[in-house]
Image (cartoon, rainbow over the protein chains, first blue to last red):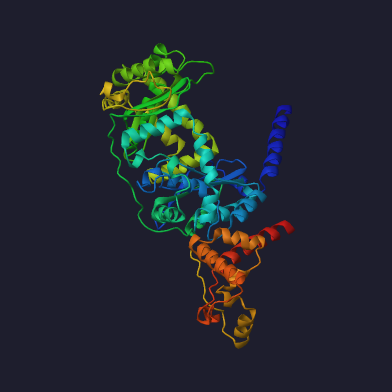
Length: 444
Length: 109
């Protein structure tokens, strides 16, 4: 009996803690945690939500619009869209948005990549109503006051100054591989800073941030509330402008910056998310090739990373798998002393094109990918982004169980098959001291 | 985003016309918004004003200063008419004031 009293004390403590952080009774009512609910509204807007039982609610509005939707004239506008989040809209001023969100302890931010832009609000459950209101006011009815855009120029400059070399290398790699569309950088080019006008932004917003390009996702929010919120969003209508992106590749883009290091991104055409099976197979292949070490001070056990590290022991290496809706890149990124960069890239490309993959490697890759996916679903901020992106790409969201069984369904032969496809021309993006970095033409 | 700028007063009245002509700035070819005191609000509104309007304003002010220096006024046919007074700063100024009032309201809490 003594043990049962001891046990009963624990839940009491937990109830108190839960009540202290979040006073909504809905927390206790939601028994089916982590079940993902999806609704498609008549205007094609997709609403997904799930319950994880944590005290913070998170809601996001994702638009299928990013750097790839830019044209040659308005390059950099997607970066400015990130900068313009939180500025005065039709419904609220900059001051109003910041102060009201701060007042309830909320966190409002925007992230974007080549294909998607996501507005996120995070707040404790009891202030959800205010937070939703200001998420709506931020993401819809944007007007881009010219003076506010002009005042934000320095923020763009800070962003640009903070780009690490390896990210720059990946940006250059995309440009080399795709030229336009997916080749557009997610960062504004230097010569475009201060030259993106309010009208350009307005036009980009009206064309691409439309209801049928959007999805609304929520964590720890009642699904009906979220659906109601999504229904009332006043979004522009239209199809949006999708730029076709074909892999061209075979070239390199090099940014000489001096210093002692070189960051080099190398890739050939990889897999897209047009089929989940292909996408997942490439994700397994990325783990097989080797991502960053999973053990502190350890080495990566990956196929490509091992061969690079034997040729260039002081170089950091990570396999690159950039999958998009209709295309993808697969390769690796190396970052290390300039003198080693030549050997590293050569070993990497050789391994990329002709590595032997054992069944053990594939088993390890699948296990690592499964743990990666599980960790991703475990963390609310990542899960939220996942909900938004998946509902955008697949028009629905895989539950953790489905996602893991999709990985299990990948056979060793599937991975070997996609690995064989990596025979296309390689593209290289390089930043830093580039004396030793080889040229793509030498490998094609 | 559209800022509709009105010409002339909201309502044309005889007393308004009398007061407008009495004030005299129109004889220098100035408009009502050219002679506002440059308070913080007006400065901010001027910063937001499209360049074209700023240039026109600067031209009128320079011309007025020149006229004042030479102790002359414009020929009567070039005076700004009561009905044609161009309130270019009004929508911007009102927005600045609204923003300031919002801040003041917030700080009261």
